[in-house]
Amino acid sequence: MKTSQKIATILVTVIIAVVFLFGNAVHAQAKAKPWPVPDKDKAMKAPAKVDAATGKDLWAKHCKSCHGSKGLGDGPKAASLKTAAGDFSSATFQAFTDGELFYRTSKGRDEMPAYEKKIPEANDRWALVAFMRTMKK
Amino acid sequence: MKKILLGLVLLVSGMGYSFAQDSIPAEPVVTQKPLAKAAFESGICMDNITVAMPPAKTLEFVLQHRFGTIQNGWSDLAGIWGVSNIRLGLNFTVNKNVMVGLGTTKNNRLQDLQVKYTFLHQRKEGFPLTIAYYLDVSLNALDKDKFGTNYKFVDRFAYYNEFLFARRFNNMFSAQLGISYTHFNKVDRSVDSTAKNDALAISLLVRAKISPQSSIVLAYQQPIIINYDPAFIVRSPDNWMEIPKNKAPYANISLGWELSTSTHTFHVFMTAAQGILPSEIVMHNTNNFFNGYILLGFNLTRLWSL
Figure 1 (cartoon, one colour):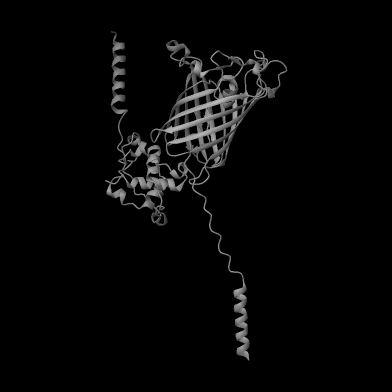
Figure 2 (cartoon, each protein chain N blue to C red):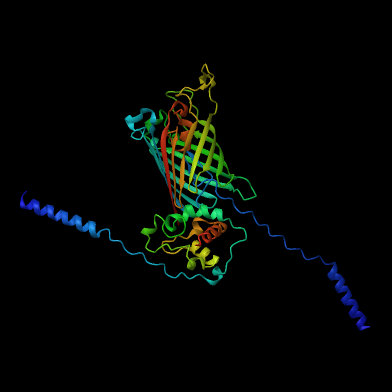
């Protein structure tokens, strides 16, 4: 092999190695920042008749891909999020009021969509909150 | 005396008060029964239009693809390498009752505009159906020599109107009946001199949910050509009605699988019609499903909330 070909081969190998080693660097996910909820929304209560089974269906369609089937923040898209999707089974999460969970589901923030557009019926979003309560450890 | 007068005044005013109309009780607040969940996940289901509409102010991208028929087996990978048809569309939901859209289709270079309007929504323990009207106007953009003699621009247009009646029976099962009327301004009479411009059609679409995100879907559509010439219907010895392939459109049958997520809906299915626009399926389906003229197709929709 000629010298110039050898140099070209070595150069290409080094470039490929650098891209492979550093091009896929994983950035650590940030923990979710505090998410204040207006007092009026915090105090809201779920309607008397709420269907957790509906909530389960809606969870499978809208939420499972990021939050996981059991709300552990381990859905297939979770790893690609900038902010960790959270553990909905934890005591910290379950201590939030129904109103807080409803507000955050409805309004969204950053990567979390505002589901009041995709799920316009409030009863359906309350059903999601009811389903989140079943994730308690 | 003054006390008597005062007493009388008070008495009369009290009587006047008691004779006055009771205050009209506040009308009971009539709360509408809540809406039932949508009967279908998407506004299209295989070859059929459904009553479903995305939420208001949603943009929907639609990709519909049909492969060739499976007749050639392995030689063209069951039609996957064969002649195909494709449509790209964009729909916008103006409000919860109105959706408008446009699209372009490969076969016959069809450009279409569509509108869907929902009259009535199914309600829980209330009105049992969702009823909608769908209109699609298409323009054939092929060269004008494809339209024969005495060409006029309006020859390119076709119109499809459909009334849709759908019901979500329970979490697992939904069904829809469609009644449509199709009109082509100009039809090709070079092969079949009796070809007609108008057709009615009746369709039935059923969906059975097998998991929170997946369903099996089945549809049947029967065209009824208006003023169809019965002289071209031939009865075979076993009494099945045989309609010569170049004389009339065949019924369309579709069977497939639907997967729905928050922002996407997918259909993978087998069907007879290679047309994608409903007007093409009703008037120009030359594939008989029961003779094995079947093709594979897929649909993909993607939603953006604006």
